[in-house]
Image (cartoon, rainbow, N blue to C red; front, side):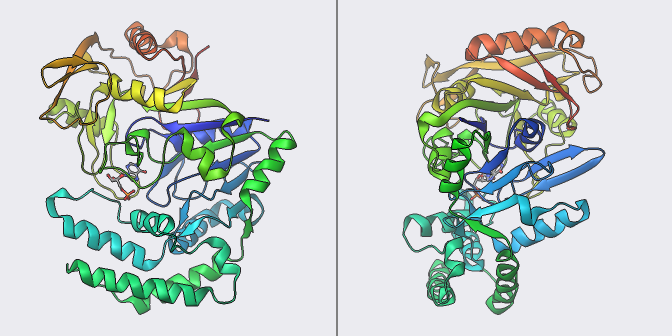
Amino acid sequence: MAVDLLLGLQWGDEGKGKIVDVLTKNYDIIARFQGGPNAGHTLEFDGIKHVLRTIPSGIFHKNAMNVIGNGVVIDPVVFVKELEGLDKYNLDYKKNLILSRKAHIILPTHRLLDAASEASKGKAKIGSTLKGIGPTYMDKTGRNGIRIGDLELENWQDKYRALADKHEAMIDFYNVDVQYDLADLETEFFAAVETLKTLTFIDSEEYLHQAQKEGKTILAEGAQGSLLDIDFGTYPFVTSSNTTAAGACTGLGVPPNKVKDVFGIFKAYTTRVGSGPFPTELFDAVGEKMAIIGNEIGAVTGRARRCGWLDLVALRYAVQVNGVTQLIMMKADVLSGFETLKVCTAYNYKGETINHFPYNIEAENVTPIYTEMKGWKADLTKMDAISQLPQALNDYIDFLEKELEVPIKVVSVGPDRKQTILRD
Ligand code: IMP
């Protein structure tokens, strides 16, 4: 059986949580393959709003198995809080949530290092969520990390001590003002590790291999977005993992020839949190209106998201890098009420018109070239069929499909599971 992928195509926050939750009924297994608690996947159903951080978005469906793959980084403290947040829903997560032994662990000192590193950068800071993601992946590739499987070993705390001591020396080296009480943080950390150890640790690549042989259906749930990919994103203003399709192969041990559909999810406009270039960013009342109507506040950090028009140069690039087979457009309802809409179809790059996403998209090199389209006024949030959508929105969708050469199969018109319109 093949594996399908669901990936964010912009700078994250596209609405992956909602769509995984909607798609879960079609899958036996939902697997996270990269990132960690820097993600905040928001799900809304039956009047409930819930934000997931590391736990796959299939957790609310009783029949789905949820796998945290080897490519993910897990903070035991955040993870246990996340489990506690699920208690009120009476979910049997000891049965349907399993963790890869090869996933790396975020230590308290990784979080401190993240803060020290950002503080040392001053104005050049990445705008990290400060969840310790970068330092944990650095220890992974530096071959120093502690993995979930290590927790099953007698002497894992020796390894912990050596690494935490090294981190403290590194924090000193940064020579910035980071206040902390490691003893307190460690008490919380070791208690959380004990709770974590009550869950099931598995060799997830083997589990997924067997599941495929048995004909089970698997959806790999991405976190962040393609433009935050460590290789293909707007480096250095990126996260520290491969958020693109190939990351699902390395982050789960799924071979490329087993990947079938790649669902690419994007907002009808563009947002970004944190620092970094954003060619179509709006600094005027239009951008403010998008932020207010779209409630563009970060689910993890509470930071206001920067807003702008849809950037088809960037989106085309993400479609290419990921091999997207089906598109899902989110938050179409947020664009209701704008007289005209703009879509960036090319860049003016150092005086030349280009259609591809170049090495450098800083404002001094890139000016977006826009096509203007008619807006619509109707409230989409109550609509549940394509035939009800205003003509101007259908024109917008048709235009995007032509430019991207991939069908838009789903249009989301509100945060609830039910506010999802399928297009055939
Ligand atoms: P980090 O991954 O926390 O180090 O953050 C690196 C960059 O990625 C920052 O600009 C963050 O704002 C951004 N980022 C990380 N996770 C997410 C996410 O889930 N959604 C949107 N942006 C994110």
